[in-house]
Length: 101
Image (tube, rainbow, N blue to C red; front, side, top):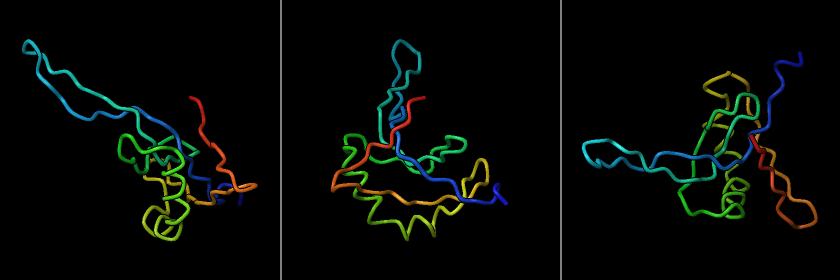
């Protein structure tokens, strides 16, 4: 069945809260853009990397961790789709798989 085929996990930049501060008795949230591993079906963030990590660094980490990712995050917790982690390098260059939302 087509619905049972795994969907590719993608790398995209998302805005995440990093801390909260109180200014004039108001809580304000400080955010940062970080690269995250996301489900390509529903967009749910599976794992976020540290702020400041570059796309090539994140990509290399994911290439080396394919086995661990497949074991640890085999299904999306939101939509239940099986995930696959087939990140490819073509002609020795990193392919930017970012999807603009």
